[in-house]
Length: 614
Image (cartoon, rainbow, N blue to C red; front, top):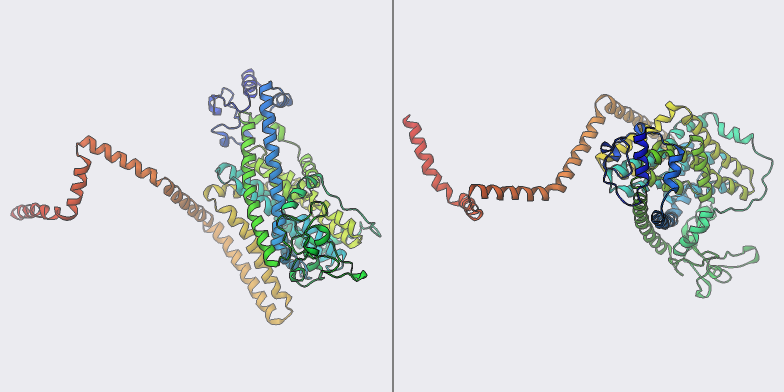
C-alpha cells in the first residue's frame, strides 16, 4: 500500500463516529478509495475494492478517543434494541402465521401423497406457518407416529427447505425506500431461494428414481433411539417469553390434525377455562383420559391460541373464544408484527449506517470476507443458537442491503443456515424415540449437504445461483412490484398449480388420469413456448422495456406537480420580459374563446380577396 493511501486510510478511519468528512466521493480522494456513505458508494464493483490489512481493521475497530467510544456505545445499544425487537417481531410473525394457517397446514400434512404433492405440501405448509423448523419437527413426529412413511417424509422436508426462504424475502421488502439497498437485499434473500430450488431440481428426481437418500440414511441407522430431551436455544429463551405474553400458538393443533387425532380445528372450540380463571393450569392443562378426566370438569381446553406454564395466558387469549375469534387475533398480530418488523428494520439500518459512515470499503470487506467453509460453519452455528434458519437469513439480509456483506459471503452463510436448521429435526427425532423419525431427520441433513456439494465447491456451479440472484435484484430497479410478485408466484401460485395437477393423478380413475396427462403436456408445451419467446423472440427485452416504461410513467407522475410549477414560473418570466401583463394575457385568452373569431374573420377575408386578385 502506498504512503498516500495509508495516510488517506488513517485519516478516514480516525474521523469521529457520526461526523461526515468534507470528501464525499472516491473521485475526490488521491487514492480513489470508497468510504461508506459516499455519493458514489453504489458505483464501486467488488473487484475494484482494494485489500486492507488486519492491522488496519484492528485500528479502525479499536482505536478511538473517549467521545468516539461513547458514540459507539450508544450506537451499539441502539442496534441491540432494534435487533431484539426485530427478533421479537419475527417470533410474533411466526406465532401469528401458525394461528392463521395452522389448521390448513395440519390438513395438508395429514394425507399420504405422491412425491410431487409431498414436495408442494411441504413448501406450502412452511410458507403458511413461516417456520421450516416447526414443519420438519411435525414431519418427524408424523413419521415417528407411523402416520407418514419415510419416503413421503423425505419429499415433505425437501418442500420445507424451499418454503423456509419466504421470510427473509419478505424482510428484504422493508428496504424499498432505497433502490440500491432493495436491489442488494433482494439479491441476498433470493440467493437462498435459488439455491434451494436448484438443489430440489437436481435431487428430487434423483431421489424419485434411485431413493439414494433413503438407502444412504438407512445404512446409518442404529437399532434403536434413546429418549432425548428437548433443547431450546438461548435466543429463544430471551425472545419467546416476551412474544408468548402477546400471542402463543398451539402447535399441538397442527400435529393432531396431521396425525388424524381430530378431523378439524372445531374439536378445540370453544376455548374453556375452569372457573373462568385464565392461566395454564385452568385453561391449557391436558386431561388424563385413562383416569377418566373430562374437559370442562377436570381440565380446560384451548384452541389455536394457548397458554404457557411460565408466562401464563397471552394478551390475545380469550376464554370462550371460537375459531373465528382466534383467527381475528392472529390476523391483528400478523399486521402488528409486520409493522414492527419494518420499523425495527428501518431503525437497525439507520443505526448501522450512522455507525459505518466514513468507513473505508477496504476495511469493511476485509472484516466480513471470510473463507466459504468458515462462513458455512458460522451460518450453521448461528442457526443452531436461534433454532431457525429464517431468523438467521432475515437478520443477515439487511446487512447485505447496506452493502456490509457481499452476496458472495451471504451464500455460504445461508448454506450454513440450511445445515443448522436440520438440528431441530434431529432433536425432535431424539425425543420421538423412533428410528424412522431419525431417518427422515438424517435425510434432511444429507439433502442439504448434497446440495452444497453440487452447487458450492466448483466456481462455475457457484456462479449460477449468484447470477440468478443478481438478475432478480437488478429487476427491482425497474419496478418495486418485482418482490411481491415474485413471492406470490414462486411460493404460492406455482405450488398450487403443481398440487392441482398432481391431485388429478391421485384420483385413480382413467378420466382424471387422462385429463391430468393432457394438462401436463399442455403445461410442458407452454413452458417450452415461453422459453422460446423469452430467448429467441426478444421476450426478455420486451419485458424490460415494459418495466422501463412503467417506471418512467411513475417518475413522470411523481415530478408532474414540480414540473407544472416550473413551467408556470417560466411563463411568468416570459410575460415580464415581453411586457404583457398576466391579467391582459388571461383576458386575451378569454376573448379568444368567444369574440376573437369575429375579429379574425375579416382579416382572413381580406387575405382571401388579395390571393384571389393575385
